[in-house]
Amino acid sequence: MTHDIRPIWMEFDGEALVRNHARIVEFAGLSTKVIASLKGDAYGHGAVEVARRLAAEDVYMLSTGSMAEALAIREAGVLTPILIFAGALAAGIPALVRAGLIPTVTDLEQARAAAGAGVADAPVFIKVDAGLNRVGVPLADALPLIRSVAELPGVRLAGVYTHLAFGDAAGREWARDHLAEFDGLLAAMGQAGVSVEATQALASAGLAAGLESAADSVCPGHILYGLAPADPDVADMRGFEPVLRAVRGELIHVGEHPLADSDRRGGFLARAEGTPTRIGVVPFGLADGNRPPARGLGASVLVRGRRAPIIAVSLEHLTIDLSDDDEETTIGDTVTIIGADGAENITLGEVAGWWRAREIDVIMSLSGRLPRHYSSP
Image (cartoon, rainbow, N blue to C red; front, side):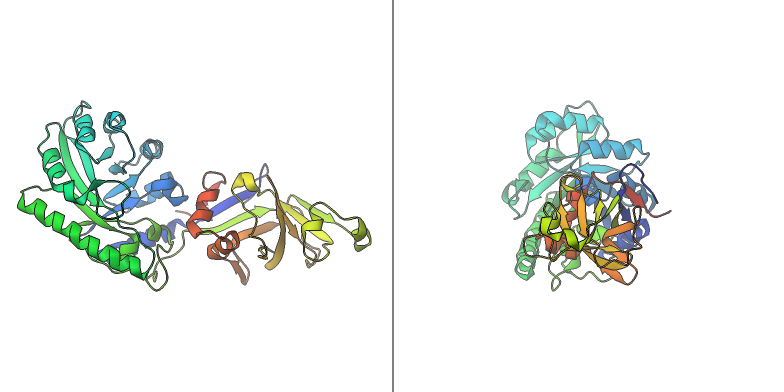
C-alpha cells in the first residue's frame, strides 16, 4: 500500500474486533445486552468503521460522547440505537432527541428538556454516580429522580447506568462494594414499580476482573479493542486481541554522512548516540501525534526486520539511524513504528513505555491524524 503524498498510516484488524465482541458476550452471558463504547472516535479506532462491524454483529446499542460521531455513524447507514454519554447542558438535550439519539440526563431539568423536544416518548438514560465522583446523580438521590423521570410525560426512561472504573486490586474491591450499592438501587427500583429497558454497571475493568452485577447490560470499551483496562493481576485479557495491528510509514529520504565529516556534524546528527553515517526520514512528526522518547530511553523502529534507533522527532519528521543497515534500504521502503516486521515486533506497550504514557494515550495521540486501514471484510 502506497501513499504518495504523505506515506504514514495505521492498520486495524476488523476481525479481531468481531472476535473481541464475541469474547465479551461469552464473558457476560448470552442474555446480557452489550452497549459498545465508541467514545473518543472508538478509542482512536474509527467510530464509523467500528459501528458498521458491530452493527453487523447485532450489538444491542452503541454509545459515545460526541454528537458529531453519532451523526457520522447514522450517515454511514448504521441504525443501531446510540446512547450519548453525559456531557450536554439542558439546552442541548432537545437537539440530541430530534437527531434520533438517546441523551443521558442527570437531573430533572435535563429530563424536562428532552420531554419538550417535540418527539413522542423520547428515550433517555439516567446516569448515576455510584462512587466514581465524576458525573451523575448521586446514588442517594437517584431513586427520587428515577421515579420522577419515569412519570414525566413526553419521555421514556429507557435505561439507568453507572460507571466504576479502576486499575488495580484495591480498585477492584472498591468497585465491588459500590456495585453492591448500585444493585441495591436496582432492587429499590423494582420495589417502586419502575422498570426500564436496560441497566448497566460493568464496563471493561469489571468484566475483565470477573465482577458481577444485577444489571442486565454491560458497556465495554478498552477490552473491545484489545486494550487492558487494569493491571495484569486484575484484568484477565485471555482471548482478547489488539485491534490496532500496526503503525507504518515509508522512507522519504535516505542520507549518507561519511565518517570523515564527523568533526563538522551538527543538527540532527549531533543528537544521535555514536556517529551516524546513514540516516532515514519518515513523515511522522509531532503534528501527526508522534512524540520523542523520554530522556535516556533508547527508542527504535523496524526497517527490513531489524531495529533502527530513533534520532529525533521534529514537527513533521521522524529521523532514524540506518548506520547498521545493509545499505539496500532505500526511499519508499516500509518503516514499522508499531507492529511486526519479520521476527521483530514493537508493541504498543513498548512505545507507551518510551513515551512514559498509557497505551490509550498513544492511540489517542494519533487518532484523527493518520489514515486508517481496516482488514477485510
